Length: 299
Image (cartoon, rainbow, N blue to C red; front, side, top):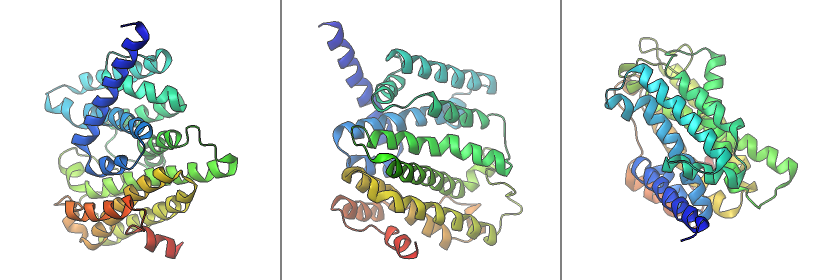
């Protein structure tokens, strides 16, 4: 086996590893990724896997393994250094990082997107409450840049023009922001009780009210409306995949709206699998998906 074949085999193993990460961790994004063509799906799986590994360092498996705060911080720094080295060289001994580097080098993702992401992950280690300014920076780095990474994967060899690209960038950022805010709202109970963390400025367990919940959901609905308006500019398979992801989160937002504020402090709301499957079936056939129709009518 020559050196080129060896690298290709290694890269194929890395991409399969990333696909397994998304399969285990995310039903919603896993469903959406299945609609994409094989190459684009591999890129999205690689992006998701790196994001998930970083999140597990900050809030998941690392703590479960009993690592100290300083050890967690060191691991996150190591992951960022490894990522930047792989972006430059095209190789990493970490299969997830290697897969991300293959995707990044193919799609034009660079440190202008990875550095804000790692900065937001690092903020979780030092900040338990946010001002509006720090919240906006956090959401940009933790979610909006991920939307921008996915957009670059969608647009490889698919020029859309400067105006079209600007609309898609705005839509990708708003969709990433909506997803993050929905997750914050859904995970209020865990963030407050387990992590001692409050993401939304001015929101605490003792002051969270129905009015607060509705205000936040109105912001989320506006993010979803703006992102839905950008969907027609995406390539067909990407449009269906993003529509599915958007519809799944729109359904979750509806369920959060119907749940009393005090209950969100006790329970984690989810979309049942049978509902997810129905929404997915509509997206696969290119039919209108729940949530998007309502947003388009109010746009």
